[in-house]
Image (cartoon, rainbow over all chains, first blue to last red; front, side, top):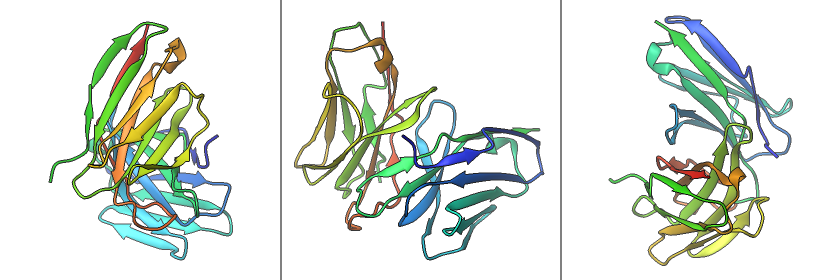
Amino acid sequence: SQQGEEDPQALSIQEGENATMNCSYKTSINNLQWYRQNSGRGLVHLILIRSNEREKHSGRLRVTLDTSKKSSSLLITASRAADTASYFCATGNTGGFKTIFGAGTRLFVKA
Amino acid sequence: KAGVTQTPRYLIKTRGQQVTLSCSPISGHRSVSWYQQTPGQGLQFLFEYFSETQRNKGNFPGRFSGRQFSNSRSEMNVSTLELGDSALYLCASSRGDGGAATGELFFGEGSRLTVL
């Protein structure tokens, strides 16, 4: 079973708009990560936020983490057509030696 | 620095056969994880190896096995293939020395297996 659940499952926006994706998880975590996957390719790491952090920025990406609600959000500002991809949240659990991925959000940015 | 290399990239097998997939991690990375990705089930964790030891295993039948060599390269094997084993198999490496918690994973491009 998967730890993270992304919402929405799919998102279609215009270039220049912001895209927000949400992730909920079930058990305690050490960190939460976001990855991007272009169609049929390997995943690329975007950002990692630790359980004692609340917000993190990286370029046009902003990630928030609310451990009390067991949820995280990824905001992509000023989206571009090249941002079209699937985005996954993944949790690093304590004592598990494994990273568990959610089902992903498919983002489509129209030029 | 070379990335994670997976071979073969594509392969077609028939039911009942077996397959071996290979993964070469980034130089210096000692942890290798394997995932199965299908449209219906998403990314499912198969197993993780560190310094030739399997530290965790996902909920897959015994037909799925793996190993890691002293140079950190890893292989996974699927025996008695079933149609449902058709998937993209992804390998990821990391330093793996962060204790029980996991950090950033570096993925290969995957091996796409089709079982006929």
